[in-house]
Amino acid sequence: MSPKDTEWGLVTGRVRDHLFIAGEPRSLLVQFGFAPEFVSRIPLDYVSSDNAVALVEAVRNDGIDTQLHVLETLVRLDKTVLVVDGEPEADRAAQQPRLRRGRPGRATWARS
Image 1 (tube, one colour):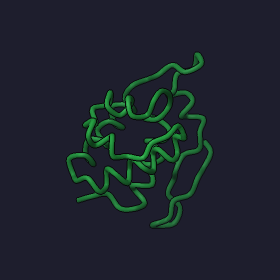
Image 2: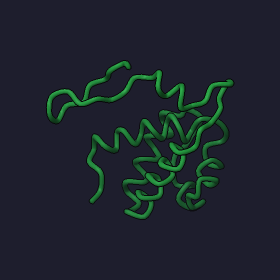
Image 3: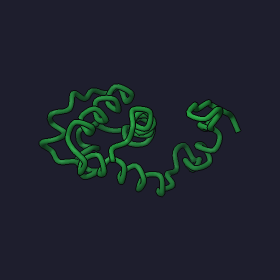
């Protein structure tokens, strides 16, 4: 079963924040194991939010194997603690807004 639109929205945010953090976007995607032929079809530039939207749209249209690959890549990145500007990313993530459940079926942003 493929994720719903709202879940793909969350994936897009994770891709923006964790996949397109530095470097040439096509090279990054190939390094993360995406097929060069697949990557060449995606309209990428140097704006991470635009790249995230383009990648997720391409992933959704490409099939379940590519969808699983992007999700697995994000899981691997979540398990990796990166040090950025001397601060572990896990510490920075804890300071950022979290998504919490409000009323059933509605998500709200909350600060911890």
